[in-house]
Length: 213
Image (cartoon, rainbow, N blue to C red; front, top):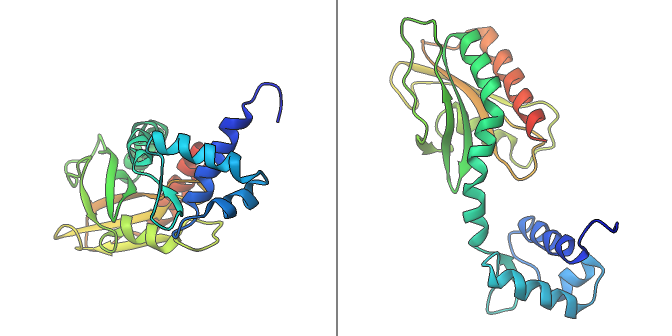
């Protein structure tokens, strides 16, 4: 630790990261071993984090991420949207289709940013805040394709008519962005997605991911 940093804050953030990486929670003893500090320090960290609802402990004493983290997470959407907008605008204008950034929200896919092309006679209306199941539509399927996989290139998904009759979609997952599951995609009125669109969407997803790292 350097003189300019807080050791306690650093440890608290490391606790949250460790808990976020497990589905079954961690005991004080396990956290103590992973952090390399004694159990008393871990107790104090957990108690402080519990007071802010960032951590909860079950009846067995295992610590898990608390609901307070969700409230903080909601504030991430505006920041991510701002970072993604240049790439979305370029994608929409280049393809002539509605471009969107979609993030995982619980068990659903949530559109947090939408850009419509300026020069087309018609395009698909797709609103910010639109939700759908992760296993339907290109945006969700691209995200699912990236889960649990060590990827260097964004996986791309193509669909037709799954969310709107007559509309086709292409989306590529955000890869290598810690703490964020999402995808960049386009939706268009077409029977199928033109070949060049998939590659262009992958490029846009890579651009957004790079900006978020």
